[in-house]
Amino acid sequence: MNEIKSPIKVHLLGKEYPIVCPQNEEHELLIAARYLDDKMRQIRDTGRVFGAERIAVMAALNITHEFIQLQQQNRLLAAGLSEQAPATHEN
Image 1 (cartoon, one colour):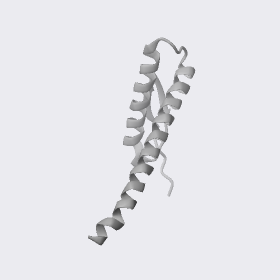
Image 2 (tube, rainbow, N blue to C red):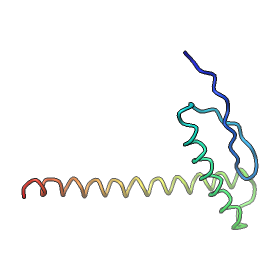
Image 3 (cartoon, helix red, strand yellow):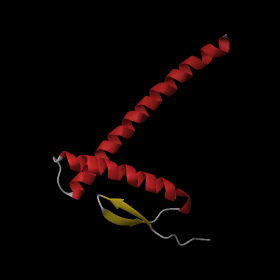
Image 4 (cartoon, rainbow, N blue to C red):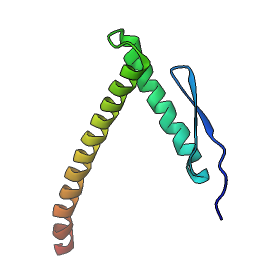
């Protein structure tokens, strides 16, 4: 049975956007919107980027860069753990 979902209102740079998402993901959507809004405000407040669209693109690029760095760190940590795992079993 398909449920009709009401849009969640998120605010980015003071503008309201209705976004539809699965009911069980509403909290995560609000957290993501708050994070994006914070990043957009930081970029706007530098005074070097103008226009909501350009600010949104810069925020998206910055967040993607953060994500890629975290993925790389995660891979390095996982590789380090897998190298240590056999050594712990030998003792």
